[in-house]
Length: 191
Image (tube, rainbow, N blue to C red; front, side, top):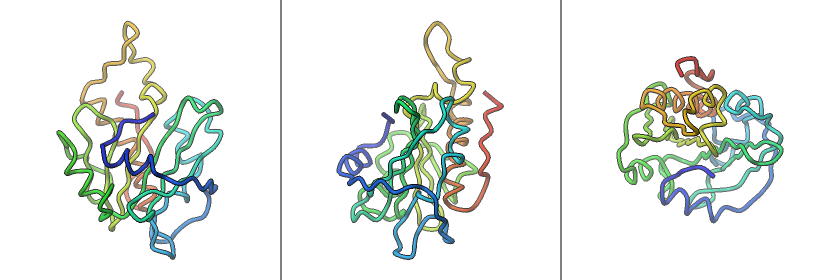
């Protein structure tokens, strides 16, 4: 599915599935009354602009060292396209923000997402921190983003770094929605 950093993948592979439906809202932008970081306040409409196919369902799993976060995967009918969101406390020792940044090979700052954010050079996935919560968003394939199919040349998608930044910032709007701060409207017009 999506590209991710080593510890992040390992922690996600051990996720338990608890198919909660997105819906409710948390006043603190991602943590509930239990202090757990959540993404279940997102709806299909919140991620639809990042997919060419219609969002048909979602899967929610617990993640993190102490299952203190969530992974929410919004997918199309055939599960060919997916937007994968992970939210954990930024201090989570397994997959928190500092851990993700430490494992990054070539992190570059990403403006406009959370209090602090980065992405890997050549990659789209934003890793953001805001108010003690870490959020990352990834796609099953970049081609699923509206307008990206027009960038395929000779059967190959070869995005420039400027295009990667535009897409990473668009993905970061999902994190901003969870954080309850910053731009929450994806802008892909520069592609």
